[in-house]
Length: 129
Image 1 (cartoon, helix red, strand yellow):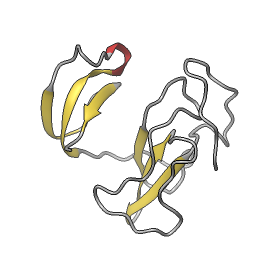
Image 2: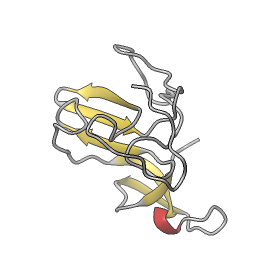
Image 3: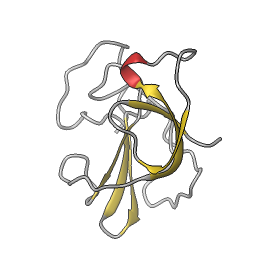
C-alpha cells in the first residue's frame, strides 16, 4: 500500500481497502499485534519480516486513509488485521499528556506526566526523547 497524503481538512472517498491509509502491523507477542496507521506517503522504513526494537523509526506521521488531518492511529489487537480483529487492553509505561487533540494548540497546553496508563480519548501525547 502506498496511498498519497490527503488534502488537509478534506475527507477523500473511504473504502475498506484504504481506511487505514499507509500502515504497519507489528506482531509483538502470540495473538498480540500493534497497528500504526495513517503513515506518511513514501516514508515507511520497515519491511515484511523486519525485526524492530523499541525506539526504531517505522515511518513518518501522515494524513491518508480515513482522516482529514495528520495523526497516528495506534491500536493493539488479537489478530494481524486492521478490521478483522478485537482490541485488547494495553498501557504505556510513561508519557506526557499535552491535552485534548480537538483543542490542542502548540503554545497553550497542559503538561501532565502519566505512568502505567493509557490516555482517555482524543489526547495529544509526547513520549520520551
